[in-house]
Image 1: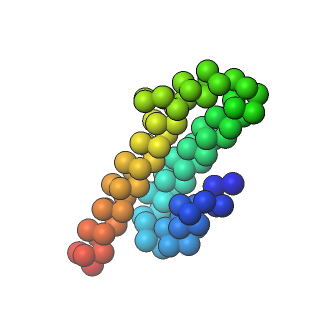
Image 2: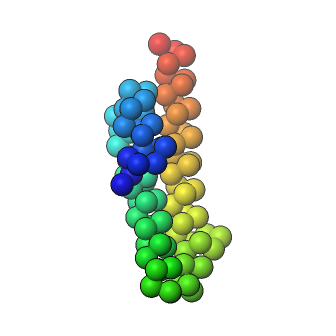
Amino acid sequence: HTDACQLGKWLAEEGSRLLAPADHEEIHRLHAAFHLVAGEIVQNIKQKDFNAARQALAPDGSFDRASHDLATFLHKATLHSARKGEAG
């Protein structure tokens, strides 16, 4: 569940108030994608497919990309919201 982690809780509470609706929706999508990748890694490990887990966790692997995409967009969206708040 994406609302069980700290980012998910923030998105459900303050994020919905602070972020533009389109940014909030995109962050939700990226956050869900991040959790999907993390869940796949957990499944790989449970199934003892350590090679697949290693590949996903490698630099530029699926976990790295999902994390980077989420962090980059979140940073951009929060900067955008902060600038918008300063102007208002």
